[in-house]
Image (cartoon, rainbow, N blue to C red; front, side):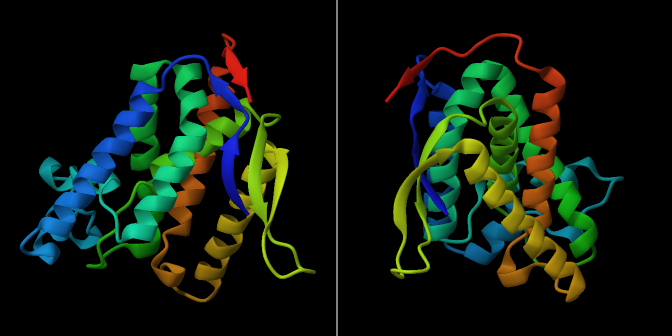
Length: 225
């Protein structure tokens, strides 16, 4: 199930969401232009074996790794989900709190994944954990918002467009991550297909939990489409 757009857009311009997309794209371009891509990735991505709590500098990749991506599809999907769901969460939290929440979600997501890949030299990177935090908050606050999505159709063999509640779309996404995460543990695979599913799960649960604790102290003005 692939979301296409949400019908309820905030009346304010999502400056931080736009800035995050721009920064992620900029960093991805730097990756493509790097004379030594492996060295670039290992400098800024999160390499579990290189982490050392006695050296704070080794923990910096908890932040920098969130802006790296492993390919065009990786960054495209992450930024697409951030673009669709980030604006309403940003409007609810306020710009500075949203930025802090986004980055913290990414850090928590990485920490959740680390026990499953501890000691490995395989770099972990991507905005998925941070974006998952945004999805979790959206699920907590806006489950009734309408989302246009491509839904698999078992009879005709290709996806059909449907308008569904955001709660349904995001629950479908989360269950998929959870099933794959459990499968990775059951099979002893750190990350099925190179995807850090437990980071997605951790980010989503963190975002949902924070949103539930904060509550909706103020409404978000939206423009219905």
